[in-house]
Image (cartoon, rainbow over all chains, first blue to last red):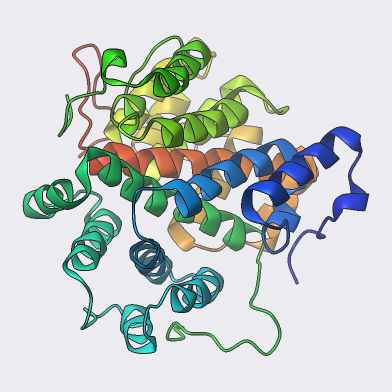
Length: 184
Length: 182
């Protein structure tokens, strides 16, 4: 359930249908949140382009990106985002122990050096709205200026996604088990 | 200045220069977040394309959009974003009282109509991480379903840009003034 109805290809006129097709081409489907974002097909298509770049063209490894996204979802308390990306993280080889530890906001054991730096980078940004000097230096050394720009956009993009999930009250599928600890 | 230098056009390959030129064309230059974001040129162009959409397309009045951006910048304490958009807000005719009310955290008190409506929506979303039924319905009645999604996209885009500004510690330029009280 959500606050708006979900749209499919046949709900759209010809020019909006082209945006739909573009979204499917970019990210392999237009379900989930995108079926709601399609109330503004032009905006949905632009967001899909950013997502597709982050997921498929970025210089950063997939498991590392998913760890950053899970850390973002945890910081803002987004069950839906955490759930969706826990699945992608598992597919990318991130262990259940690491995912559980990220859900609790702990420092997971068994991360690579690069993953640890990326996690610190994301947490600094989300918790302090700045990156501490040593973490920024460590990230620049490992990922270069391109990778650091991409890390920042990944955090920002999934904060943006979270705003839609929150505003539109997108909930977990019936029967899905929340992975973040329940609060309040 | 920021933590790392801005990308200059001659540092880029021919294909990447295309992305650079696209951003210049849509914004008249490379400033603020885009100078650093262009270290990943294609991603910079993707982010800029969303920005162009939420700023210039859709039906919302330009002055009201700037009110939304200011309220967003205030919530995430982005001095750069606030200062850059205070200038655009003034140019679009937003009153000094509204700008100061948002900067000082007094708004939506003192605001009325659409300004109060969108500032309340921004604050519920970013502060409370929950939008009340009353606010959601009021926004949907006023701006429609498409407008509600686009309003949320406008806030989200400036959340994203705010992360880039914060990560790279992009500083105010000489002609900008910090307007959010520290």
